[in-house]
Length: 394
Image (cartoon, rainbow, N blue to C red):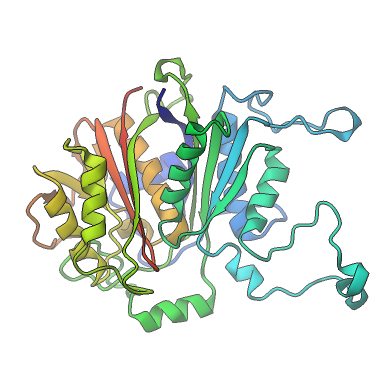
């Protein structure tokens, strides 16, 4: 039986999934870093709040979840939690709560930090390290299945989804909630990107695959999907999103670790991954990594040209949303699910002068066409590369 994305949620500065989709179709683009509206974010650090919101949204949509029924599970007798024992959790983030832990001060008294008094009591979740987000989600969403945190730079979201597929195939869980969240506006990080020369200016914005590209701006977003292994005709679709679930058709992982911050200029690994997941079949949409940087875009386009036959629409949401780092490729997955269900591809609104390409259609207006099979590409600093094909079989 196939692994299916049965529900999804998205948060960007434009709003939720439907609001973001409408903004993208209208050609609206951010030109600088902007935050998601988290007025009801609660007491948690920012990335955790983002992850919780999309995680809760997906769990409410998941009508097959045992004991969930659209509500946060309640505490049972003797304080035991009505748990989601057959649901696993994978959190994707490149840096976790970077804005918090770089400035973190332990609130405990000095005598509680040293010696025997340093042991944490049950329920304490300190904002240090990547696993803190997953620890909070497990507690708040009452998930007791397997839990992982994936950090693979800007490929984190897609690699987490692939890891979830592998967990389902091995029988570790019946369903996997995959959550990706990123909020990385700390001055130290931004200064590092500035020194690398990958940040754009407010006038230019992010222009993926454009001849006049100057880099990206850092964005903030969260995305979540529910993965399930089940016959596709048994799914109850969420209200307002008929037929928008997607089957994971094929995937491939690799590394082109030729540099800490640069891709292999030949693009051999990426080309091989695209060829492997294509399986000799074409795509109706390629959602590219497309960062708008001098180095990435021509390498990625050349790899697409070498691996794909026939003219194929290529899209990058980073022109509108900026680069949301560890969350970006799961954002791509959600947008591809919406493209499959709605038969539309948003415009590359900030790419008026695209790079030369043999097979890529880089349109600056919306495209209306059936999306039967699509591809998502992700890459990250240090070499992680991933490609995943989805099809609309439900």
